Length: 248
Image (tube, rainbow, N blue to C red; front, side, top):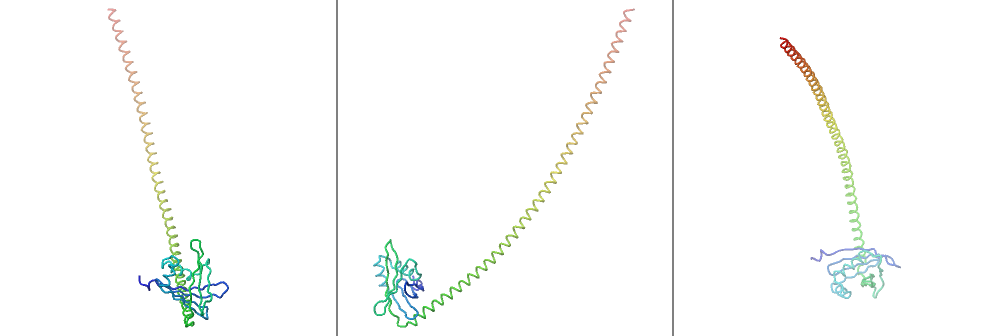
């Protein structure tokens, strides 16, 4: 991977116990890093070469990439559980240090920072970086705020549209249900009328059948009575005939 693609920049306002805050700007490369430090009036620089970084990483039994990631983490963002220091060293140099724990052991890293030949340039460069970062952050906040407002407006529109569709759906379902009930009631009434008509027709048929049966029974009784009377008359005539023959 190209080294420029791995280059990162950080700037930290570092609070140090018992001293004024300082600004630490870091430029992180693939296998080395550069640090600029200013207290507002003086500035210091630390240019860690690839050999120096590899040697420090070997001392701590770490890969170079892991060593750089850990250094970037502590010099890019102040860690609340770390003790930072920026103490005097020989020939106007400063010693930048920070502590961290590894496997239950508290360790301290130190890097020597040399006085800058142009403190004004270093300080202006750090302030310019902070200004640009602040502008980018402000623009990002503005853009995100606009995006949020746009999303909020769209969400409100969607909510309104959803409520409208829901109401229309309820109205449609109510109308459909009402029509269904109307058709169902009409069919029930029609079926009821057909059933009543059928029951009425059956009653008439039963009455007619009963009348015919009674007529048939009545006719049968009259015929039987006539036959009985005719039979009696015939018997009587035969008896009278026998009597006359006997007398002769």
